[in-house]
Image (cartoon, rainbow, N blue to C red; front, top):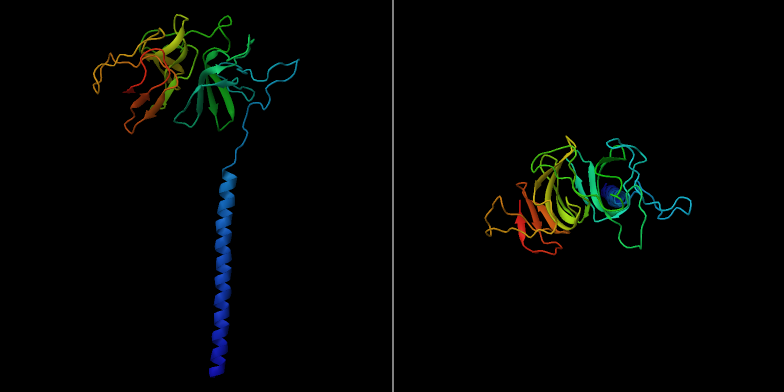
Length: 268
């Protein structure tokens, strides 16, 4: 009986060892499976636009915008190639794009260099994978960037639109409205410089509102008293500033490139 008990113990011990090995293999499988899954999830997917710069003598550049009809999404629509554009995400998860130095629906480059700034506003819906041209111009103004149409301060109007610019600062508020500040571009008088105008765009009405700052470029900052808010305070014209939104929904702005007073930190 004692000999039988030893055999049984050895058998049980062998079974337990086999179970431990099987469990270890399952755990290893789960770990490597999760790693493989993470690697798959971390991959890029080309979702739109062209992988070409030049389409040949017959078709010219491949990087012009295809605007379609204002306010109408279409699979063929695509913003032209650009740099230093402003971008937002609205509360519905749609992506928005404004301006930057780039190519409208047609443009004849002269002497190379940086293309002109634009003032077109686009919406991209991830659910349909389609772009919609929402505001601004699809062309230049007789070969020059489009000037701003400011209207009345604080009053939304369908015809309002910021002038062409690049390097503008941007925020999205808690209601999903899009905010734009400054940048380098064209003011309301068709003059070039650093801007300090503040704009709000409401996707619900598709209207821009000039909310603050000047319609004239190259304005110095009005600082007031350090730490004290005032209706007359306004940052000077600039581009490429850093921005944040705090937990209370306040907009913050720091630094940037300018020909006027630079530096400083401001909150709105």
